Amino acid sequence: MVELKHAGYPRSNSYDAEWLLAGDMGPNPLWLLEDLARDLDLRPGLRVLDLGSGKGATSAFLAKEYGVQVWAADLWVDPTEAAAHIGRTDVVTVKAEAHTLPFAKEFFDAIVCIDAYEYFGTADNYLAYLTAFLKPGGQLGVATPAMTREIRELGYIPEHIKKLVGWEALAWHTADWWRFQWEITELVDVTAARLQPDGWADWVAWSRAVSEYRGERDGALDMLEADQGEYLSFAILAARKR
Image (cartoon, helix red, strand yellow):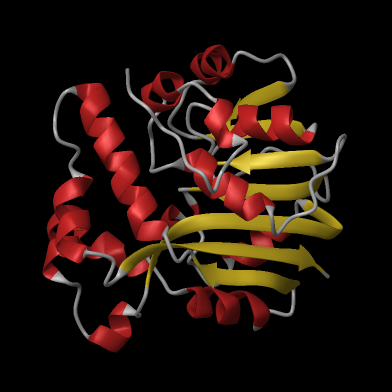
């Protein structure tokens, strides 16, 4: 039986490891969400959009742990499949593309995005689009793969990263890059923009668990073992709409 326990994330420890790994669409989503939630004010009854929710582990976690109302939106996972994996009646599953969200403006109290924002959120105009769905004072929280140094600063994509993800690593930024990108718009007040000190190690632990669960080596392990925490981590980002 695969074990996925972490002393730093006690809420996540109560979730079945095989259920989590069966829904794998990105590294350690509950650890990331539990860490991110420390920089958010999630209270029972709030309306929360889980953007890029995959098969819904993060949506189930939000509903159970914080008592919020969750809309789980994903482009690639069928809503019926996601609902079956989530196994809760208090999460609404929706098929949606991040640039054409089917919601009313100012509908949500919070929007969270785990392991997905890097695919669509780096465009200069995306923050304005997304925060239109937040109430004034609403919260935005993101956990995304990150670099300890900007690729533009390095002048190249490190070979071990390039080998796995190619040019897509251009969307992996430092926490400081994200802080500037959000603050300069004056649309939000950034309340957190930090790199996880143990982000690389957590990613390694997840990839090893995935390897054990699948019975084959996870594709990210070569990249992570070559990196040794030099460049790779996760950024935890939080902000409030003005």
